Length: 222
Image (cartoon, rainbow, N blue to C red; front, side, top):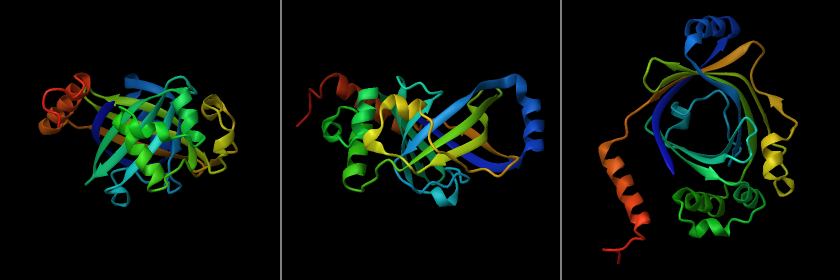
């Protein structure tokens, strides 16, 4: 499992302001492409960032697919705690994806991957099932040499018309859905993303957890 800690702030800007900003930082463009996210709820506010008051103390689960690459999907969890976002993500195989889509989730209960066990509880206890599919046309620009980025979403589209039982992993990633645009004409979402260092105590706990899994929990487990 991979971990990130960061903060974000988003604003809706006009196309002219977007063009000015893009031209100023164009030499530092890091990536450009298409992100598709299948969220495990239907309460998505497309214009509210994860660090806003609305998102405080909230966990968001999703399946993420970049540029239609259905063989390299990720399961993603973003947890907002007081404005700081803790992100966990892990690789999701096509077979695992399809089992989740079709409701065959018992295997997650005993998974060695903590994120799968977390999602199992969300789906069984809290009934958080896949509810909305969102496409982002995204540009990513690195600011300087650190972990700060400007992210531009030039288009956001979504649909709630998802027939989970009929979906394959490949169609989820590459299929054409009846999407509805969520941005007003001429508007762009600009997000400032600032990475944060992981607290030492948290890093130590993660190291201990990894060591425990690698050794099979021997030497002190009761």
